[in-house]
Every structure is written in structure tokens, then in C-alpha cells.
Length: 555
Image (cartoon, rainbow, N blue to C red; front, side, top):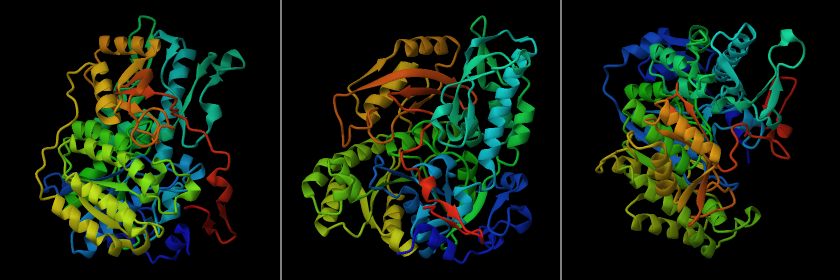
């Protein structure tokens, strides 16, 4: 059996100009990155504003497990299936982060016969967007420390600096560092921190900005520190906005590539909904809606994280309204939630399935709270039995959900035709989309609404530092912002070990800070880290390149 990268390397790609032509994009509106990648020009994006929007379909999933779910694979396969049905569809995806590519996941371009290509480019440097984000972030950090070195005219309290440096790599030793060591010329000594690039505020700003004007406005609002009077010091105060925007100029433009079946895919920004915003850019989603009758997009990790942020942050800010949601699960993952070890998931186990399916049930309930029609799809594995598949189907249909098996990993678009038909049917159903909470609620009320309604928590506890931070943020006028909850992706709770549908637990809030440029308040729960570490045997061990430049080991 061929690996994902072998399938991708054996594919015959169309020149990206031909893929663009099928979307109605003239060649002169493309900024080419070789034969198979391109960015859309600013002029062309602006020219689409008055076009009618297509239908917006969100793909999300149950909580991830070592058994795999296949959310991106399903997104890609569904887009290909729409094409096979003669429907005009464009996919809008998030870009992979280098950290997990070399850490746990080994790549994030879909899998099997449902991939976006060129797969190696996408999983590695792609068009340099993440490098631009990293550079803009660290430019702001450099200007901040230089301002202090050059006399500190803004009276920045060096004990209260909140801006962190970033790197697009899992590197736990950078979580807490000391900078400025050496001579007087090397700056002031202080504690500093790193986040992974995809958890940075710059990433969220890029993903949520409507255009360059909005980007600059958001960059200017970024809070980097507080002064001796406790007032926020911003990027605008540091005169950093223009130079940061210059670095992000090209990164603002969505990237166009293709699937294995040549379905157009706009890939731009945003993974890591467990510790950040976690959706692809508003610009890419809006552009896809203008280019096609159907835009199929995805949100990071489980629906308790990615979908919640898609609805409560992205849709709230942009005015986007999803027309249907696809919820991805696997029999294997449900059995894992029911207590079966990874190595034993191939055997039929109805009792474990019945125990683990309550994780799926909770996600169905959560999605329905937003008023959007839900389609559940099982990403089929060869070891799934008919009894297991039938049980899940009956379970979903009893709860008023459309249901379909997906075989896109094995068959590409052909394996997603049933799913596509079910999604089309769901698009005709009543839709009363609304966000979960209103802006007027206090930060505590917003946090507790998400914790209780989405996670199923019995209550919320706050560390003393978090209480103080919430009070200060509300005093400074940030209380009307939505909350961006940072939580483990592996559980509905903030404890990764609690699988299935845990009840009676308390969510612990340990830190709260504002991302004023992004337009939300970040809430750190449990032990989640914004700079992940590498596992004992990182995926990097298996990645290589031969003398001909052929890469192996990405998956």
C-alpha cells in the first residue's frame, strides 16, 4: 500500500493557471509560486466583493485520538465529490504548521486519495506565510526591547511585558527564557517567553483581517506591555505598524492549490484551535464563497474547540453564516473513547463503541445549539464491521442528523458521493444560526457559558492570578470581547485523560490575557501550553530527502 506522500508524488498535477481558469480567475490575477501554487492578487480579491455568496459548509470532528479521525481528508474528499456531482465547489483549508509536521502528525494535507497537492510544499515552507508571521511577531518584540534600551520613553514596566516571541517549531525549552544577558549594550535582562507561531496573535490578526486597512488597525491595537501606571502599551505606541504590515503584505493573499482530482483549494492561515483561533482566514473563506456555489472549509481539532471558535469568533466578527456542518468521526476513535487500547481497535467491540459514542453525542448536541443542520460522517476503516457501522448510523439518525459513510481516503471523490448528497439535503433544512453568547456578558459569564454548555463542565474555578487579570481587563474596556479558550484537544474537559463524555468536572482557569488586535480574550485552561514540545520519537526521525531531492517520511 502506497503512503500518502507516495500517492501525492505520483499524482499528475494540472498547472495552477488551469485550476484557476475553472474558477473564473484570469491568469494575470495570479502571483505564481512555480507551476502549482499561486496567490490571488489584491485587485482580484476586491473585484469579487459584489458577487453573490455561495453556501458555506463547515467540517469539524469529535475529539482527536491516536486512532485518527480524518477531518482534512474528509474536507478534501467532500470537495472532490461535489465536483463529481457537477457542483461548483472550492475548498478553504488551514495551512499546516511545521511544529506538528516534525512532531506528532508528520503533515496535514489530508490523506490517501483525498489530499491537497503539492503535498511536500504545503507541509514545509509553502509560500512563506508562516515565516512572514514569525518575522512580524519578532520585529515587534525587537522594537519593544529596543525601546526599553533606548531610554524607555513610554515608561514600560519591564515586569509587566506580555508580548512573546514566536517560532514555528515545537520547542519546549523556549517556553520560559531569559533575554538581555551580557553587557549593557545587550539590553535589559528580563524573563521572556516563546509561543509557537500558529498560536501567536499575529496569526489571528492575519486570519481575521478583512483587508490591509483592517490589518493595520488590528496590528496597532496589539497590547505588548503595560506602563508604570498599569495602562496598555500598544504596537502603535511603538511605531511598529507600518513595518509589520510590510512584512505581511504578501502573506495576506490567499494561496491557491489543488486536490488530487484538481478541485481548487484556497489554503491560508490558522491551525491549532486548542491554543489559538484555529480557523483559516476570513479572506480565504470569503473569496471561496465568491468563486463557487459551495465553500467547504474546516476548523481545527474537535468541535468543542475549532467549531466553537469558528462560530463564536470568526462568524461573529465577519458576519459569515454557515449553512451546514459536517461532523467527522471514526468507529476506531469512538471505541478508543470507550476505553479500548490503540493496538486493540481493529477487533469488533460493541460495548466499547456504545460507551465511547457519547463523545459524538455531545458534539452533535453542541452543534445544534448554534442552529445549523448537522451531517455526521464516519470515515470508514477496513476493520469496521457492519454491526458497528449500523449502530452509529442508527444512533445519529435517532438524533435527527443526516448520516453518511465516507470512503474518500480509499476512493477520493467517488468515496464521498453519498456524503455530498447528504450535505446537499442538509443545506435545504431550516437554518437559524446564532452565536452561543452575546458580547454584553461579562468575561466570567462567557467563560462559564462555553465551559458548561460546550464542554459539559459542572463548574469553573479560577486561579488567583486569573481573577486579577479578568478584573483588570474589564476595567480597561476589554470585557465586551469574545473569549478564545485554550484547552486540551483530547478531551471535552481540560484533563486530557478524561475520554468519552465526562461529567461533574471543573474547568480550571489559570491565565487570562487580551489579544486586542485579534479582538478576543485568551483563556488558558488546565495544563495546555502555547509552545508544545516534541514527543519521545518525533515524526522528524522518519523524514528524509535523497540526492534527487525526493522527500520521504511526510504523511
